[in-house]
Length: 179
Image 1 (cartoon, rainbow, N blue to C red):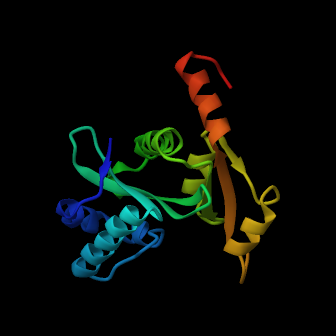
Image 2: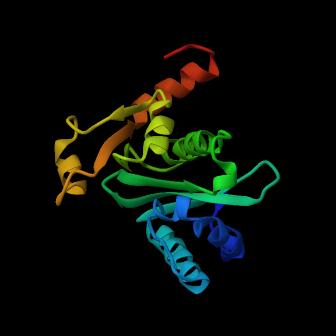
């Protein structure tokens, strides 16, 4: 479902990213294929430096359908960014990708807290993230981070996932226990 980023998938991903429904929510919107290849090269380099972890989301036959990143990694925290091509909306890929990526981040990397900033008008993303039992609205709980992402105007809601909440929820899911 997830794989490390490489330049071979750029053409497929760029095609999905250019859809206006997707492009307005992409962290690094690109105006050309060459720019997208350059941004992907930068993300691969940032991962080598430890400031970013980036993965390609694959469908069940292994074709690239989107990306998921943890960026601005500082002191065991970072921000999550995800996008998926419109043909794959509403099919569960977003939730499965997030769960697989969070498991990697919390169990294989030294990450403690993951923040998600979602535009207040992005109802699709807010509904998707609010379905996840380990995600908490953090506007008031992490006010300093909330203010930093809304320094000019309040356009984002802040959510967070703590390692302990994710691990506890994952153990419950593995044993069929509702948490």
